[in-house]
Image 1 (cartoon, rainbow, N blue to C red):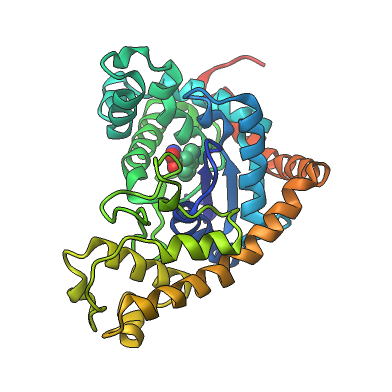
Image 2: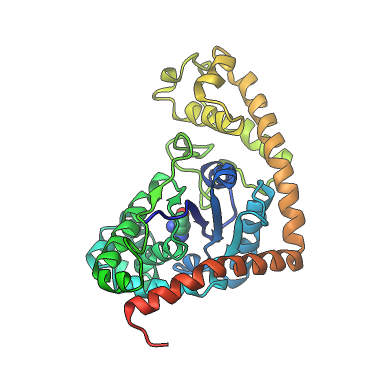
Length: 347
Ligand code: TRP
């Protein structure tokens, strides 16, 4: 069966949004709006797999929804909502908990990393939700029979697991699915959507470390809500080496900090690394950094201004999120009705 091309992605409200979230995810979501049905979720139920202060959770939920909109996602076009408003996510996740195998979950590298970090020596002290996380993620995607998910490399394994769950469900319930009049698969085998070269924004203080909200140094991370002066200051103080910029991408090898700043420039200006080097090759940091600061401020400041306006009006945000949750439910409810029948739940 041909599935409607539909895109789903989500961001966890577990910290202030930064340049990595913007260039690695949000900015890439925008053009897909023109070519696909798009659903962009604030995955609050995923956030609580590790402890979240409820006030922060609420604030970050608004912040992500505002960032989606401020970055150019149209809430009348894309479906923008927070996960917990559509309870079907939880219901399908439970069914998937009974489809997925414990062995599949124990192989998830992100769980192993996080359980190590959260639980320290005692990784059994992490929440059961953190372990089951990929099954909720599969539910997010398959509740809408999404065919494509734009995510970074760190989520590839979860997407594979989503396909494994879809395959096992399609197989285990083959007879019931046929009984519903569905000819082939009930769930699609969702693909990772590539949206250009992989973008991993690194720390401004250490080109080998991912940019992160939990970095000890505030100067290493550009936040989406930073004001113009702060952005410029962080870029000007970014760690670099002493050499001029090379004229070709190959010349960036072994220069992690230089590579990161050039990649950021390329992403913010929608050009390639080679394109940036064609302009700046041979220049020193005294020329490149001010140019990058100016570009970053020009792109990010209007977004920050709009985000601040939106989050200040929670009444308007509530309305947008509620209205969009209704739109999400319009897709999810019939799918769940079928799933309940397939599984054998009486209603
Ligand atoms: N696990 C994703 C992350 O940590 C967030 C996420 C939850 C997601 N559900 C999703 C991403 C569904 C894409 C599709 O980044």
